[in-house]
Image (cartoon, one colour):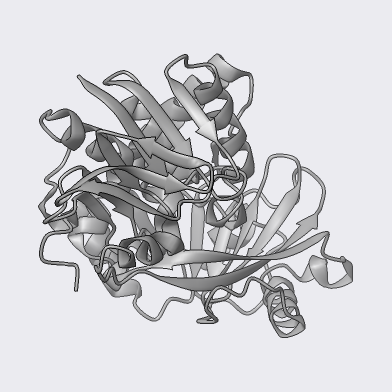
Length: 365
């Protein structure tokens, strides 16, 4: 059994990686430069599906399908063990006036997913607050959203209850300890934390850490801004998406509208331009929001990667160093499968899906 694993980055990917490894490792230490789960994991919308699943490669699809099927039982397990409900909320999702509707339907038939074209009248009947002027709709039943800030709280509580897991917040990693080409730990301002294996789950910051070893990981921050409204609990019965923008209902009547895609480095400052654009999208989708004032507006940084395919596996040339990062827009969607696959690889078990598409070997530059 591996004695100690250090996980660098305490977002949902890092926390769930720790949760899945705890049974196979003597000690797991999760380090985060701030508080766990306060970056991309907190800022996202939490739709348990890629926004346009048919536009992704089979590698992303394989992770998404496994995760979508697993999420309800993950939510139930965390709620039962911690008392904090991640609120895996099944609402279904309507896509409106898609340019590539034919491709979406062909993908659904090929993959056996419950996505189908429906009369626009059905969409309006199901979502009476939907704006006028839409002419076509496709619908996927069973699509859920997870309340990501509560998922973070639940995972944190579950880890704090495990005797062999340590969370070290406000613990910045400044370098790696190594013996030859083997990584033996991480360096922090408080000293070295030794490890048999080190896992980078640092999202948009993972590339900065690998650069300390002279490696180039093509993961970059991609800013996304969202706004939040508070409505009646039954205001929006289903998620809806049109023209690249979506509305997500929470169980308590909060409605999220997102999101922007901006290449602005590590700047997370919300902007008035994005606020007005998101409000306009909100009103186009749900005209009743015209007289509502957003109760929240924030930005987060996605870990952008080529084709959105994450890096999961060992870093070539550096024994003891692993990656589970680069999930781009789908970190919350892909987390259960990514973290189970990672745990299988580290423990030497048969993996849940073919790990080859995610292997860092041949993908670092």
